[in-house]
Length: 612
Image 1 (cartoon, rainbow, N blue to C red):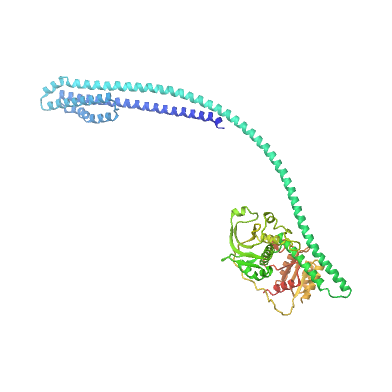
Image 2 (cartoon, helix red, strand yellow; image 1 turned 30 degrees about the vertical axis):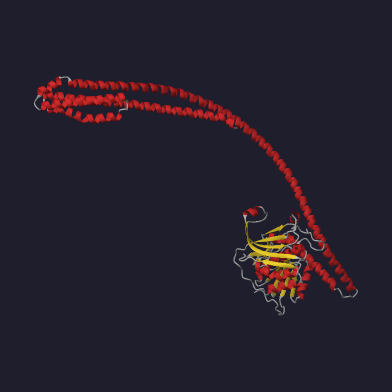
């Protein structure tokens, strides 16, 4: 590419040289013309000097012949002007030896002439006219004037020769200018022709390159489409594999729990049919299996980031301090526990019960990894995840976080295990020692809370799991009183139960009556509004959220518009956007997730009814 550009560069250089030479020649011609003008002006000054000398001589002659003083005026003017004229001539005299020598002769001759004129005038004024005229007739003055004229002629010849030389030089300059102009025009023509030729060649090359680029882009687009199709198929296969693993794990665990429940209920039925009443162990087994099934669905919702969270402003140090006894009971006496709490720890806005569940899950996993003997360290710290960290970790926003770390001295994990640790139903524990949902539940809760979780582990070096929850920047809200607690006052409230599933509605109303409440039930929102109008003493609306025609949220809004003092508890097995948005319960919403125990129902009712 450099050699292809070389002729073009040389052409421009030659063109620039020709243009520069032409400019220099023009400047030389201008200088010659200026010198010619100066020579003419110099000759005019010399002629003026000679005229002054002649004027002085004419005035002297007229005075001597007539005796009239008026004839001396030209003499006086000439004598006064000669010094100035000589000064101008000196300023324009070039440092040429011949010219300077002639000027000096003129100055000497003028001095002699002025002396002679002055002397004759002085003699005449003294009355010695005869001597003055004799001095004039002597020819001395004429000889001096001839000498002046001779010197001036010599200077004119020197000037004429210089002008002739300059004229000759000017002619040469003009000739070179013509030649240079023709050469410049020829160079411009050749350079233009070459440029056009090169441009056509380059345009052709560009067109060929563009065609090639278009062809390659088409080939690349086809390859990308092929690769995207292959990747889509792979993703679909991976998705189906993950769904298969998830459904397989759910089916396995639920079938085991349902097997216990069905078996226990069948045995209880048989014993009751025979008139036997020792069925407590069967009922306990069924309840335990049902509770484990409820925990399983809760963990699956946590992993899928769909569990309803009730965030509060949390001091992680205070929460961990309050959990110390629970953690010690869960880990046993053989595990040493160390807590390192940072001073000045920032507040976080998260569901405190879920934080407790996450820490307890991590502590139990650490206990199992240490085999019942080792050291567990729980640490808190203020942390900043910068842009570079966020760029290398998916779903992480740069900013300030509160870090909670759980470290153990267990066996550690290799990289391939770490990569799968958060997958549901993945576990390295022996059979009946774990469900594989603990870490997936922690992962889902942290991500749903806008945080980040990271595992640091090496085989034989233990494991550290760090939870990062976003720092809370708002004002801390005052705690709301939770009610009357263990108040044993008689229950007198009436509750309206709204549930479209008849079996769930019946079990809920039976549980409420068991707790001592007066109960009115409705199968739909429209029926509930009708009974609300018919029974003004209703204290609380206990409604399912997912119902046809009118969901629970719309029902509650209409009911509160009619009875502003009415309190509301929502319940459902799963909801996306009625009272839960982005996984967080709406403000001032009371919620009880299905399934619930009668104890959980009683506590929730009293907490809401006793709220001022």
